[in-house]
Length: 407
Image (cartoon, rainbow, N blue to C red; front, side, top):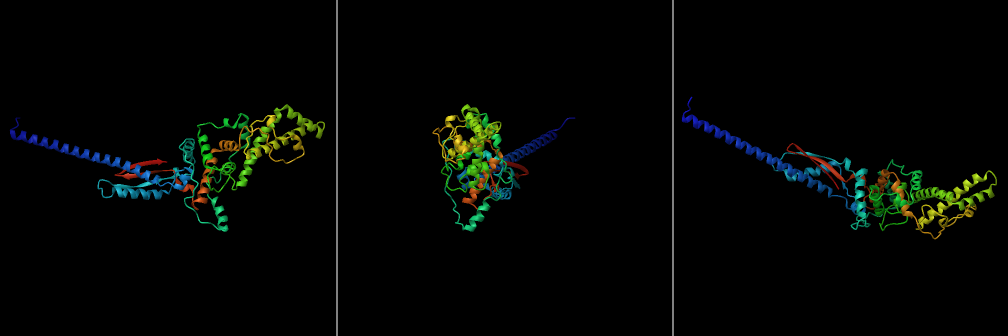
């Protein structure tokens, strides 16, 4: 069959039309894909910007005083802000269909132990560098002067809703003794560069203790590091708790020192024979050894509090108390032998904070921050209402865009 010229022209016209329609469809598909890609990229960039904007609302007092970053808010507050930002950017753009946002802050509350420790470790590392900025001690917002009744009720409110509530057990003296039996100095206990090492660096940069206020200005407790170890609601109770722990640990070590010294053992044996001659002398010697070790340990604590150092394991030259005073039950002032080497009071505190339960340690640090923020800045401050990051999902053109940000 032979096609005439009209049929040939008709076939070419159909082919050209089909090619043109295909090209137009491809162009529109390309334009649509490019537009969606541009919208997706722009949305992700905006989500990042909006997340940074929310994180930038961190509490200035919290950051300046403790180098902890946290913004106040609940999921609904963040969602409202995101919707507001989205309305400003998307309204009037027909090619954008905004489907709303949803936010989660549960994993980013500042009472999340892991999240909080991340910030402490960063701040602890910074405290070791030349870039360390000393904590602000000035009060930005001065509260009104309270009456005596308000002070009493206010003091009680300071301890309401503390992060460490229900977490009391933190320290084992027997476990601490076992650790010290295998080291020559307390410096052998903490491993430089570990997370606990940097957390301890944070503690000793941002909190006071009985021997050093560190120029930190006003705080509710004077013995803050003692609170971290003991968790009591008064300086006196916390200091007493530290005293008992130091004496208990020193007593075990001092017992070991007496048992290793032939001269000291001979003195104990002779005294026991004088007090209870015969078979009972052995039992008396055990009691005298314990009493002598306890008396020396009590003197060790007095030396530490006075700013002196005490060798972890003593020789006879560093031994301060005499057995005669123990037998006479004489209470003496601090006896200083002139040997000022070994560990100081801060070393014992550092040891306690290093070997105590790490979770309880972090929770009590949170306590101190909440107590001082309430005491100095905001009566109603609750650490759990502040966040160290956020996670949200924003729906645009039917696509979910997830954003996760932390300080």
